[in-house]
Image 1 (cartoon, rainbow, N blue to C red):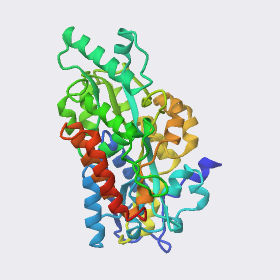
Image 2: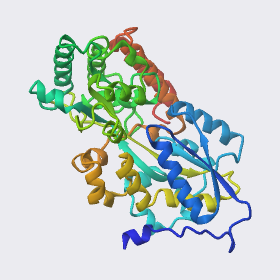
Image 3: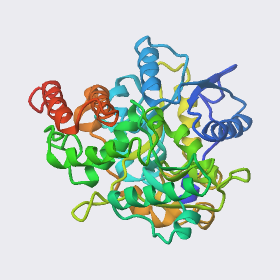
Image 4: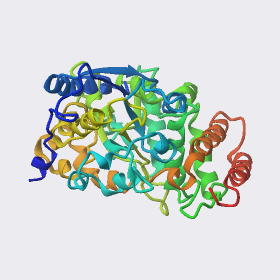
Length: 421
């Protein structure tokens, strides 16, 4: 019954017939095989409806893409009908997006993770549909951990010790390019995710709490960033300060890193037929901050929204409904390791066979820590930028965490106007 509810009417009638010469445009990301999967899904819908769909190229950097969207929407342009938006953007972009509940039945939306539907509902308007969700995870070279008789690390300090031991031993054995740990430390939204995971895992809070209080200037947050800063030039290369997801994956997948923090999409690529580390990869939850800490992976993911300035909102909503359907999400999960936003798919045998860790890490995805975008509203982009600028300075050795975080605390408190975001 659930699958039937998610089976779409691929032929959409606008007052009885599809508008003559109607066409749509959609922005899709290009991380890993993302663009290819989007193109395939769009082509199938287009072949069934006869509606031409153009894919618009947008930056992979979420910060750059957000700025582009703001520019396009502020001009009320109809150049992009469907926008792929980050999980932290609905509150900011909502005034420019249509209410999808006018086109998509509530019986359908009940099949998705409730937290994601809630996240995408602004002032009782469903402004986006969840397409795929992610949480940060730890990749490791299973062959190397077995060779040196290590189990996957439970804490960040264990990871530090293991990474250093294996890195140095492999270099001495003839692999001079081996790195212990790669992650996303470039000054962009990806660093916000990485740093929030470190800090939250130490019990240092989530930058801004649910009451709107700024919490970053605390000893546990300082301890987390002090440890991360110690990695640069030791278990992580100096160049990691310019790494995003794909650059991290490039080092790990080429066989030159023991550990990597990344999103689940990297699993399918790391196990592709031409991958040097195929069959030698393990995935576990990110480490705890210590005995008093906990595992913490930041909630990420992308949604599909329809611009209020689209000339064909009903057609666009139908394409969104198709691309986020059970069948399409199953295809993307089995081919590209993209985490579904429909809980039932985490019990699907085909999905679990293609991406085994989805079952074991289900709770990590379900309980992932959220960035403070809902509480900070349209100030979130500024909050995140101030955060990753400060963290980048700490990692680059320009400031100590003890010097940087009190200043960041004061900046964010001024932004919050006393907690009233």
